[in-house]
Length: 462
Image (tube, rainbow, N blue to C red; front, side, top):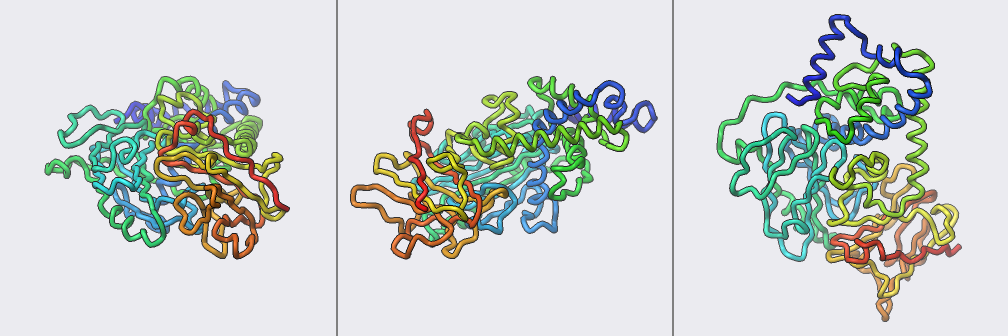
């Protein structure tokens, strides 16, 4: 049982005996102004926790979800992403996804990746419920010869089996993966699907051929409903999820502040018990946080700072939350770097209903990447892929049929309407409205990692 679970058990006992109400601290010790400040901070702090739960709920818990994998420890293998895929924001279209979630309360799990050909990129990214990127077994970290790693709870201190290379631990009892397998071209999909079927997850007991331990207590999951994250219901999710995390000393100040408005592991959050001015202030604090997300999302130039380990991110809650908001399950820069492109060369936000655009690379300006690079189109505000007549959602170095000039330069046409049949090989279709572009590089080169690489300006053509 984690520290937070123990605290929650005592809190529930005291509440049941009438010793205090769930929100008595909030009513008695916090002013409206303080509550607004704390609520904004708390929303940003717990936003990744709640939105990671959304993804876990849809993929591993809700049997009615179109994205249901079959439960914890089960894979959901996808083909190429399309506009119908709305589980996560800003999906890529270059490497079909494989999702899975593991419940580590009873015992660790073992992940095994198969040996694949040297030229293909694959990576099994694992995140905890806080959105920290924990590890990336696969091409960059281990090569393509295959590997087994252990996925364990924060409190696990057992012995690592000899055939298992290392242990992966986060700050939550549940971990999730977004595993990527490079697709060379559409007709390569069967090869990707074969590799996906060879990804293996096993409880440690099964991996060792031993009897399974006693199951962990059954959880009464909170039903997820989209839009709840912008209402008072958000705080109920946060309190429900906190017991499945392990406190970190870096967070002790925000943890202490949250208790002042009734945010504590496992305790009910009942807004009706709050004084009206405090309740209104908490709602205003949430709106402040959402407004900050909207404002910062238009200024992004380096999304890689959003996707980091705890060791790298420390207590940078703002960037961690914004990363989940604009691109949940984004990866660390060592594996892939994402460059967000929200504006044209004049500093105007992209809008396919108002203009068409061109991006011209000289041979020397092409993005340096060991594996490949791509540019993906997203409609705003959802950050989902865009329906279009040629079913193209990204374009890049691995796109079949892209035409380079004789000198090695490349021109990409970005518009809602076709630039003409002679240019459609290099066309990235846009929505008839606001959009956002993301340049992805896999196995990024030195100039991308040191941030000296600059994407050429994207110009307006009409």
